Length: 122
Image 1 (cartoon, rainbow, N blue to C red):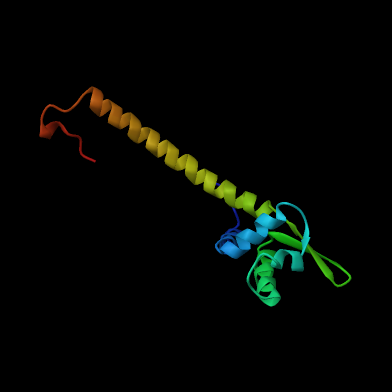
Image 2 (tube, rainbow, N blue to C red):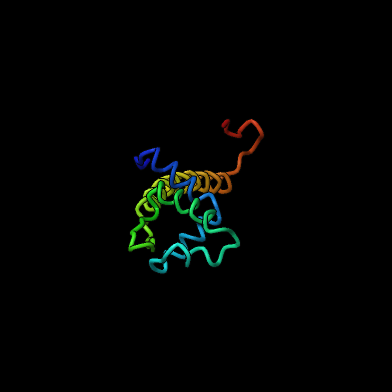
């Protein structure tokens, strides 16, 4: 299995668990934005959006630059790549398990047991 730091992975999945935060990341995937532009499509106050942004920032999913009073935010996909690599290792595990099951079932169909006592024990 892929080795990832548990703390980073936990922060990433916790941040991605919220649909508003995923929407904010989607918006940032199209380019850098200021906080007010990110807040416009959401029916919530600017402080509420800022709380979501802090969670994303603590997870390392976004970075912030301050230009005067304007805060410009950009996407940092590094933690998502680590999460994807972690999930990929499990996908490969389950695909291999299903391939073994498929092979076993094909063998059973090709050579069905003659009596109930011929069935293999699992």
